[in-house]
Image (cartoon, rainbow, N blue to C red; front, side, top):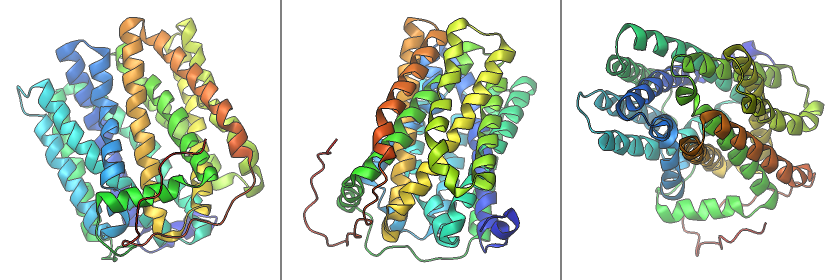
Length: 408
């Protein structure tokens, strides 16, 4: 599968695509509104960054307690139910006088629930497309993320200027309701991918099986850590330039869109291993220019170029699927997504703390430098061409949990 026509002709891809569009638009509009609201109320770069990216920290709770549900709950019910829950939670954030602590409590719940959503969505993608179509399908969904982030941040900026953060939050809630309706009406009632019941024990058994493979472990780390550090840079856009944060976010989304388009549609298979490492470095290196306190146009170009490097995740996800048995694909993709989002939350906290001590520009430079160091340190493990047979799928009755001590 190499063309968009073939991709969109696949049954169920269109409703999955539209569900993702609505949900990403909702997330960007409401995230910008809440970040602006929290910054206006507290004047804290750290709290503003946490309000936009902090829910990612809660993903670690879902990844360790709920992730087995990604393969054990029917996809349509999970996607529509989660979008409905997000709509209600986002609407609650718009209540006048809601304490900041209550806002973060709601964000925590959203983050825990969202940890399952990524595994369900991308596990379903892996199920409805042939194996040779996964990279193209995932790239199109990522392109949808980039496109809707551009539109969402643009719409959010207009709504914030014309109306208010609380009204903008209600628009975000409406978009979540639309995502729930599309998922419920457009997707077919597929059964779950694995047997058994979701449980903490099953989640840990599956996570241990996934983590036991050294090649998979390097892939997970490469997907999680450099990405999280760079999102830490992005979390400071509001405190760096409150009036122009929307431009920087839109530049990042545009760069991600370019990278995903080129990688998913036009990059031949023989170039994927060759360009993986340069793309991972590209994600961080342009942010080093913030040490020089660049003008807005230079900053926007640097952010756009860096975000092309997010396309490295597509290549790493393809490698992850090659190393993972089908019955664990949903949990593997959910673990990848939750781990990445958790590290984004960690990156936002670290960047916010550095910005409190120094300046946003200094914090962004430090985070970018750390990302370069981590990427270089993982390069040797990712160059290993040996790919063992995928780990056998554990059964719900599998006995004792495998040891979780990693072999670094």
